[in-house]
Length: 120
Image (spheres, helix red, strand yellow):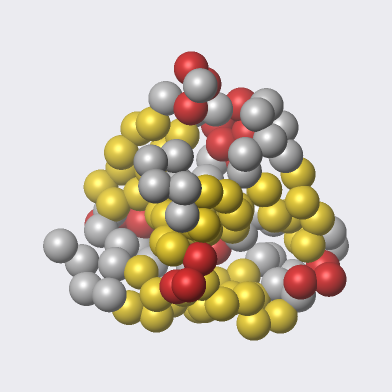
């Protein structure tokens, strides 16, 4: 199991920056229409483990399908560094981190877990 670490992350242009406490040894690769097109790899954390450091006013929210997840895009560079929503199991507030937007992550060392979001 991965060790709990504080990761820094953000968008491409640097206007959106955040920190998240996470233990990341695997990521989810979702095949829903938006995840498949953008190619993100996801790791979920509780809302209390996520801290937006800058850029709240730089974010644009996009929802589709059942409107359960707020996909957060930087309005300048278009990158989606994270999404906000609720756990389908517990109802707890969650943040799905786009692990490709985190500093210090070697994607090649992570286990990729497929998720069939297209069937939801």
